[in-house]
Length: 195
Image 1 (cartoon, helix red, strand yellow):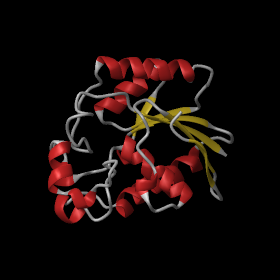
Image 2 (cartoon, rainbow, N blue to C red):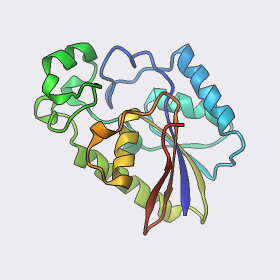
Image 3 (cartoon, rainbow, N blue to C red):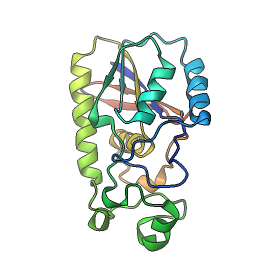
């Protein structure tokens, strides 16, 4: 059984202003760096077998702060959801113009890719399943793994595990929040979310 400690990146420059998906690559803010250091302290007792991160700068920087001496494997499958043409657009404008694709908490609803030409939930979950299936086959028994990724991507990972198929039932984890899962070839278990 492999245990994954999945961390959302710290606050980035674009977090509160624009739709920041797979095509937007901004660094951490000073606040984001502090959040990553706080998470590093929470995880300091763990001796990670392996560390994976999205190659996007905000996730890469977060991983480097949490485990500065570790070798980090960057995997494109861990990148943020691809919002297509909406990437880089002001979130308030998108919420207004495409209100039918956002709930009252601004969670993205299915079907938006018809307008954004971005990824579907099925496409994103397929790449994530590919990552977990491939990775867990190579890891030693009882591996402890740090994985640094993105808010919407982490929601999709939790959806794979719980099979809720309703992403509005789950808000994105907070910046530098920790989610823990256990993964075997037979089962996938959510141990906790967004601590």
